[in-house]
Length: 252
Image 1: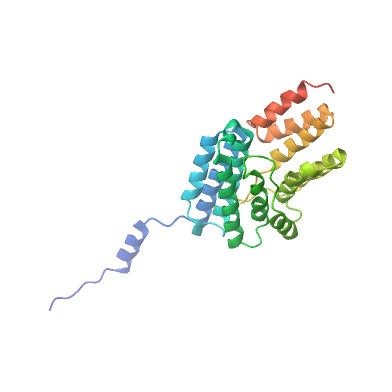
Image 2: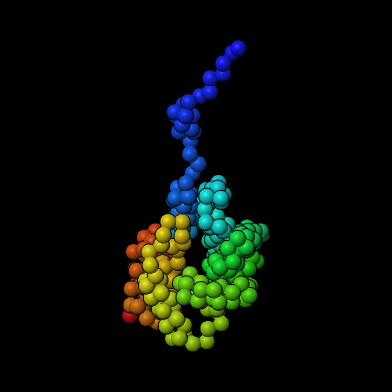
């Protein structure tokens, strides 16, 4: 009778160790951070192609190796930034470009907060996207998701930033608005350092908003100070560079 020889436990372990391990959650979070950094940099430099490449990197990630909703969250964030660039540039006038990016942003923000109902920033991004869907700044933010974002996490600086962006055209008191933006900047500076796989955007944008507010009120010195601080965080921020030149050309 032929005796069957089963492999030893050592052989089994050796074979098992040769099998590539699935990507760890830490590795996936690192890859997400890399893609998010690429999206942020592309937004600062107004590089549409690079931003689209960053979005493609997000799309390639395995959502099961990330915290619930984070893949869709960053896809929503990237499409929001893409819609902003297209809206503010000549290409934004091409029918469907900025509008499609804004619609994708809204759709993926909804997908993110569906997976994690406490994701305040996803609600906030969902709220701001409709303001860009027509490739014009005439549309309004969606009130319901913005209220939900505030109810979940009113102290979140990224939620506060989007609230200010959504409501700035309705501001009647420029001095009060400048104080609100200053408080937003303080909120970013008090926030703890971001952990891997967690959002860290918004600080430079808040400083630029503060600089813009000071500039509109005629305080070019305070404007330059805020814009220069934004450029310390994001040296290649094209919009901040242009605004700094404007502020420098104005008397104090």
